Length: 351
Image (cartoon, rainbow, N blue to C red; front, side):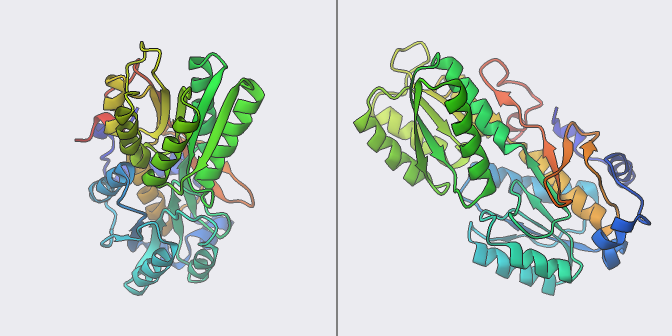
């Protein structure tokens, strides 16, 4: 589905691809508002959100590679290190250095609205990756359906536990739309479909140390815990496995003491943990496609293209999430021992 051999496309092929994805002509009423004076093209600035996650480190590596393949005039990336103040400062610096479009992944989705409004006032289109700002104008949000992550995790654990047991959920930051979407969907699904499962929801702010401490406490209080939902394997996987190993609970699925674990991210380390029987499943966030389509939409914005809700030609759907704000929801498959070796999964294409 996401073979790296298909990522590199010539500029002409990219133009055809974008034209087929619900785009309208530059002369349409919305084109001048979204493309504006930048329609002739220009430099694209990008801010990386963090380097403390294996998932984001993979995304960070895809960006320059794909920028070259897509013919994007990419400025040297900045990194906001999970700090919205740094993101604001980095964005201002990129604009002062000549950025005509911005790609960002705000981790605090409620605190970036003012910056987005300022960029809109300067006619600088913004593409956000993985997260959707709560307010503010964006040209496109490149994301997967994060509610589906929570639902898939709920259904997987519900089936494995046969509707009974105790589950620890490592919630992401609830200041992020991703943390809210995954948490709300997981809770709603559990309540509706698996009322016999007790869920201990642990806020973590996407920090592995907080997740590990919470798990330590819950295992002491409830040694019969038999399920874990990690909303981000990139930060939660290593500390979780380390703690379970120290308690002699890192055992194969055939052992009665096995704790069923499902994660979100699709990093190579998760895949290996599935092969080793240490965790049982993950939802693969497409780090490669996040990079590819974020850059593609930023480039399209500078070319004056616009888009409309509907199916795309890259196995996704553009949806209107309210007020005309568009989000390209990319596919994010469930990965288990049955399909963990699929060569098309991006986690099997990186070292």
